[in-house]
Length: 515
Image 1 (cartoon, rainbow, N blue to C red):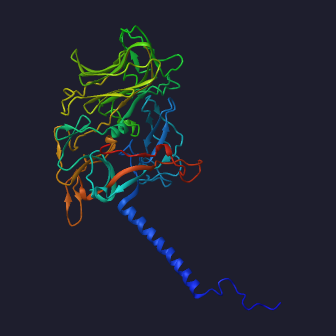
Image 2: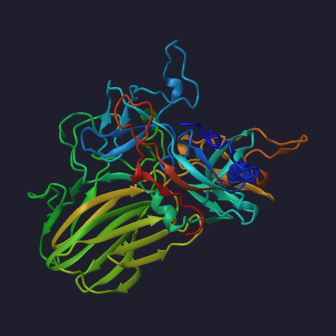
Image 3: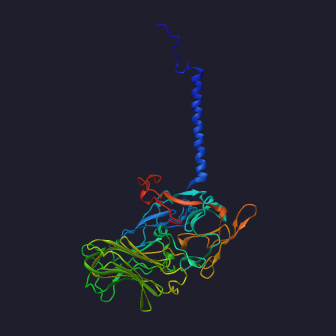
């Protein structure tokens, strides 16, 4: 057949208008790509940016590179910090700071924060990367920072490095650290409830019982076999190992007979400000924390007498109880004299129903919760509001009751305790006053945090300007930590190069300021 002279390859006969339209489409695409890139750059620079936590100074709130461990005795999960300088590369040199090995390494000796089991192993354990967080930038250009915010700022001594700490004092404040608490202008600074809930640390959880309690690997520097740390006081009839469920406590006594079990620190973990995240050789010299919380579920059977708990601080014992009529009472015992501090009438405890009971003594407040009912008693804001300080007296935790009762999920927690070592700033008796546009920050892992307490050199700025040692200047505020979006994921299989599986259960908001 004769060839058709109009046949041609596609596009051969495109009109100039069609070619022009296609060129415009390509130009529009590039324009959108450039616009998207600019918007992303602006968003990152001025609105929100992702950061990775490099160290453990904010543990357990935020994790740096760490080992994820599980106690081989009781099964309690905890994290322990990875210190690169303690490990060697293939050339025998110490690993550089902020290095995370791609293969497992042998963790150091650690201690379970619940049962007190000391773990030593030669097994290789993967090193989890630090938490990755989202930081809301420029918020402090429009709103004033709030006390207890977790903030990102430029390190005053090395402004090219970003730090993350908790903001505890604002311009014009006079800050002082007394017995682990923050005082502003001579008054204790209480943490907002959501911040407080994040900062409770486990002392003992009865749900985690060792599988081999006779192994001599538990408790203190002189390890020994594990024993139930809650023990009966004379005449008490509590059973601390239920036949059906060994994690439950039970009582069967007359309704007018008080029965008390006390937590014995010679058997269980003590109340020192230790962190499972930190080296165990630092435990011995840690101070004692006396802000505690005891928590358990109670189930009365038949008509109960009462159920309650007591916490001591210095020389005073505080009690919280609810009786069979539903009257909740907070009282104190000092030098043998009991004083009722507060009463509240609610409905009687429901028989054969598990109800949560919590009693806390924190930041000079007594907080008593039973089910949906909550009582709070303010001891006062002054440093001596809880009585003369006695660091030589160990706090006591007791649970008491009468009638037929069962308890489950029994646990004790301690508050964060800010340490103030020799040479530190804002120590007891030596308050530190902040000037205009100056802020004071502390790490949640207080014994292992280089923060405003210890900065010795003046902060550096441009044009020969220097800032006072121990402060974060307003100019160096970067933003507020908002959300942990990638809390060190998991590898889909052992030899996979990266931890690509998200750890969804650990994704969380970062609380700070007011709720």
